[in-house]
Amino acid sequence: MTFRTIARLQPDAWGMGEHEQLLKMIELAGSFDQLDLTNFAWAEMAFRRIQVIDWVHHERVRDGETSGDRLSPEEWAAFSGTARAGDTLMVCLQLLSHVKSQVE
Image (cartoon, rainbow, N blue to C red):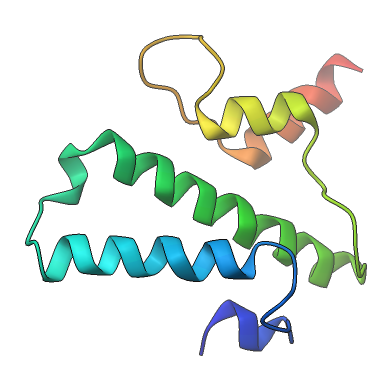
């Protein structure tokens, strides 16, 4: 059962088309092209984007919301790896929330 089914999302919901395309690209690269996806930066970025889409919809379901992106620009930059805090950076969203609450 996919998260789309669990969250009762329509195919035209935010990020669903992108999510499906990214998963198909990853599947083809790993199965048809037989690439070792753990050694490709593009695959890591694709997986991060998939995780962001999953996370946004997970938060909506948990909070009973129907719209609105839950990630701030800072969280998105940190999670997507676009922030320059080192060559390889991936921040757990729960850790980011915890640190944010401690600073406030």
